[in-house]
Length: 502
Image (cartoon, rainbow, N blue to C red; front, side):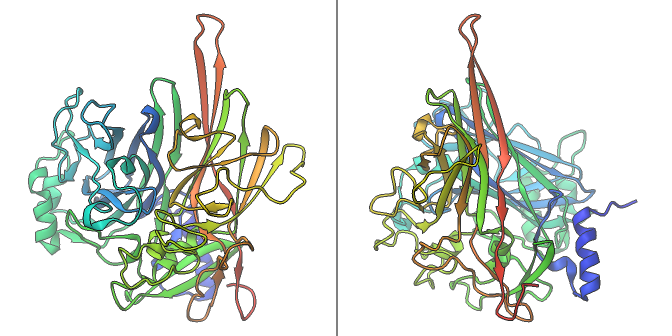
């Protein structure tokens, strides 16, 4: 018997009552964790950490998946490749600092001990464990592609990544024969990419069924920050086949059945909100259909807890990632952009008041409370130190780490993209207001089109809290570390000129 997920059942029921057609074509964030697209809000190799990755194909159908790593400043691509998953397959990999692997002096790389086919294969030699690896690349932001941010390979050490299912693999077919494991090993990895690109009949539009996870690990200290990937379902009804070395498919290729629009389903206030956005007519223009994905993540207020200790034995970092921001602010990729698109404030690198080179800042509100309802008796605090010449409450990157009474390498995640908050007390909770009235422009997305002109207020965001506890051991002087990860909680704000959002 085929299992129907809770999310699908709920959406189908509401859609039936409301008379919504093409229910399966609307992109939505699946709380059951299965989807066509997986978004991982953070990777890092800083401070001798590694990021371990796994993705699982829960179906009896092979999958062709684009894997893409994006650096944290402006989400310029630092590596992508195609992954071919066998039915019921699991693929794992390890992102590491080249220096820690004794194969470089700076930057990140990836290796895998997994047998699943990747194109290209990881063939660079030199790791002590004998596995091939691939270094992350600076081509997208160095040389003729500079974007005013850092240009060295050190920029590759921290960011986020995504996996987009391009197609299901037809069985029987040459591609299925290449990539389906026999006694744990696929027989034809060397010809898989040619069969994928060369014969259209080898693939059909992708279905759902992927889930993923990642963990930031420091072997020496024993810390382990593990999280589940965000899963987008209803992302595409068409094949998104793309060869290696391509910037496609991307999140902007979200589509409905006719590929002229993209629709999202968002649960807010106990209701299902349906929002449809047009597909941009010109490829170099702002890809307006990305609003469908952004609406799924759009958040007015971001909530989580913190705990700190003055001696550094307890620490908290928040990862705050804007997974679609690059489509709104990177004029180097979308040459038709002459200004940042709502809900963001500045193009990346715009050297104007409120922004600067290597930045795309957005002003937020910050309030911290202790555990007994107390809060500072002054205006909401900002980050310290603020970005150069910017308001103290500016978040300026695409992947951000917010620390609490910590700095840089001394923080839980050792981030190079960190902003610090001086919290109220040593333990409590914080509210990051992403719909701040102090912003230079309102943080409101463009209205949806058609019957429901929904306007989502705030910013599209994802991430988690990472907390670490260190305890000294009187026997032998050893230190024991304990760590935990907690997904952010959030509130949504939607308005519509004609009344309540629907």
